Length: 144
Image (cartoon, rainbow, N blue to C red; front, side, top):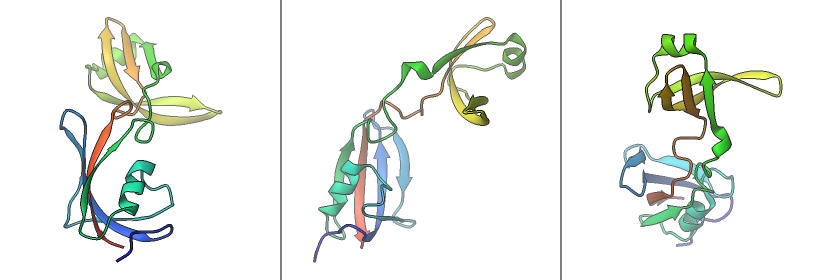
């Protein structure tokens, strides 16, 4: 039997874990997902591993932050000083807020994680919560 090639649609299930063992995403055998090889639907390292697999095979694949959710960017930390909003929301570290951000003249709602609250100021992080983390996938190729 041949391995998946460019353009093949594969059916997989997987468990994604952080280095501390925390599961951040799980796709079960009962509800597998399909992806097309070469369509940038998954990190390159994961796709390469799947291309080397046979149906029924399971592998552990470690994906670097650059291929996952990116490197943490310090410039995406922002301090907000708006006592009225802070008092209204009563945010605590770890909370995720949906904040309005303007980019190229278009206003968007962007999720931000509360990092710190200091009186009338609030530090939020616009990085994806998984940015900067290595991701380990236990992936099984069901079919192609």
